[in-house]
Length: 299
Image (cartoon, rainbow, N blue to C red; front, top):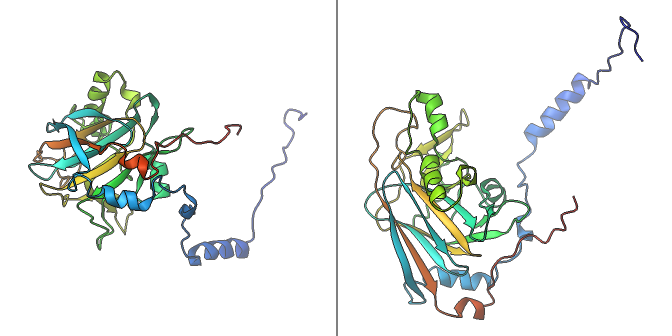
């Protein structure tokens, strides 16, 4: 035991200046390494040929429209998609982005996990990418089967359909402006969640559908550009299990104005279409609903 007033021994671990400099140099000179060896991901059930065919399933008559709805401007709506069915978010009237949430329809504890999806795929998603669920489930909830924008990345590093920004929310808006706004995407999604028997804490980080974003090269801050979406464009996804999906038409419209800035952006409704593929088609190709992680959970 230490006696009162006795000096204490403080051990300080320090590297030599040469060792510090060498470590810093190693980091700066090493080329980036993709963190996840994604070639080891489980293959899509049914194979890539099936997923290529799904891109034109509606046009080829291999999928039938079963439900359509409209998401009003500055509001949210939800819909259910059985496993093996397809849904689209469609630009119908003018450039508009959407913030989308996805839950397991049978267990809302399982929901879209944007950060893991970003780690596995990229900052922005497109055809062929999968929407992964949170731990301990960690499985594909949905797969993007068609992206009519197919924007890629521009010279500023911007892409479309991002998983780097969260939803706009009234809490951040109040911090920035001191104003109360109840049509932020978080609020829109919360109101719809309540209608679906869920709560505010079930609302989670989103897929920013049609949103064109990136990080500035000088300050590395999140930025947006006017969305390139035009009427007729859509993002189409296959439900890999039974899903509840909800989306908000962002009050920022096409996000050509900064959040918290003055002005009233133009906002438009968006369409939603849910299709049922031809009976037995997916199963004949070997497709099955995804299953939760088989990890034993022993930690």
